[in-house]
Length: 308
Ligand code: NAI
Picture (cartoon, rainbow, N blue to C red):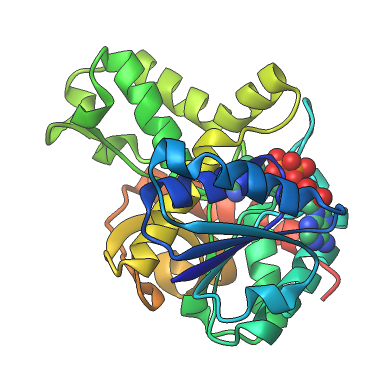
């Protein structure tokens, strides 16, 4: 029940905090390259344990991967985030080298690990880990859809003036401003399609605000968001560690599903003790199928920039 989080920055620390607060893991190990940073974040978080009532042990290390040995799950958040005006794709040059090296170090000390990739451009970084790590495909999961779906539900609740607990909905395809596909046709309020309540204009507003959800926050904060990303990662980690078998959209290596091969893209999957246990193919409208294919083309172009 040990979890490693690489990158003790904004997102990594938020992951550690939410995982610990939910009290399902025995230990969270934070790793960073900045001297003393992970140790400091771990100590600060541990000093919230008696206040917040959790028993998860949080430790930190500056790059000593032997401390991560025996991790069931490892989350990769190391790398640079985007600044206002930047796309996620512009981060590839720096983040690809970091993600590849970090994945190799994790696997060396935890050969059975399930890796969750967070660093951006996330779909391409997830593909990179598939191409370079040798892990089976069920053990490499990209986190984007869980966050984007939460942002979709936030916008739906706002448009419907409804409590978020009434809302269900999912975002699939690429984790990018243009490639994201919020499935408005399948979103519901208490089982009733939201399309029954929202005008076409309002539906389009929700879709567009969801797609630029990350960019909106980056503009406000001056860097990318961390609370919702950390919470989204904690939901994935809990589903694995507690074998909950939740259906969560994740970036997974496709082999014919949704008409795509040799690419990582957001699709609904059952997440349990074996990682991504099953991809669920849901029926899409013709317009959604076309958008999914366009989204895949764009990710393939970014993947082409990888030096494999
Ligand atoms: P940050 O700059 O606050 O933290 C990144 C940390 O990684 C830094 O502490 C840095 O020292 C560390 N680091 C860099 N190279 C490393 C290495 N080789 N080994 C260990 N640690 C290393 O950035 P933030 O805001 O935490 O974002 C992290 C990444 O997550 C970015 O690429 C960002 O775009 C991405 N992100 C992805 C989301 C998603 O939904 N997939 C959501 C939000 C952010």
